[in-house]
Length: 331
Image (tube, rainbow, N blue to C red; front, side, top):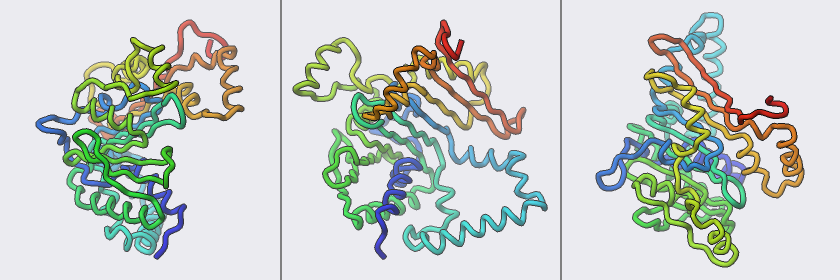
């Protein structure tokens, strides 16, 4: 059976966003004798959008215990929710089960540990994509799905190769010779890291190993720019924990010694707009008005969620970080 290009794209998005390499994600195994740091110490300071759960399996378990989930068992809605579930299962069995060779229930149980995804601002081009995922006991199913995705990419004309990144082998999926359309996946033990930028991937692995991030090789104009910024840390050299806006936001969201949240969200809205504006003239013109309007004073927004705790059925906290002094619409 031949798959359309749009189908490959959806699979590669799932590969990058939902767990990019549905490989043998597992515990926190790392390099020789090293435990994997949390995502907060793996993602770079330049992260402008970040979503993370410390334990995907626990998050699902807790969500199922909330009053919202229990509504599905209410006699008045049980029939409807049952029909929806049956329709999803039938559609999967008809169109996808033969390809993945795994039932829907197995796939839905894949996330087991920490899962974090982020968009990272880069000096040029589109934002970088980075994902770290842990699939625990579902490692074998995850590996099976990843191998099938590689086969699908090759069938659609993409190139799949293994390249060396210092001490790691990276599985690289390329769309022809387009260097802006690359997904690289590195496996360490049972944990996979995926990124669409070689420097970003290497910096993440360096953070994992707790070694300094080396500046990227540069020549021509890039070398001149690097010389002008001498004294500044290399790109991606610092982690998200060193991002002042991130730290200030979550300091307000998590006061005291309460249980860590099951879900976390962070966005630097102006940074995200700058990272995605690219060559969009309209977007750049609109952004030029932000200082006069005071919109650039919106520095960050964060949210954290706790579910089925001893005190709360569901608790969601949000914090909007504003510049001081305030001006314009945020005054």
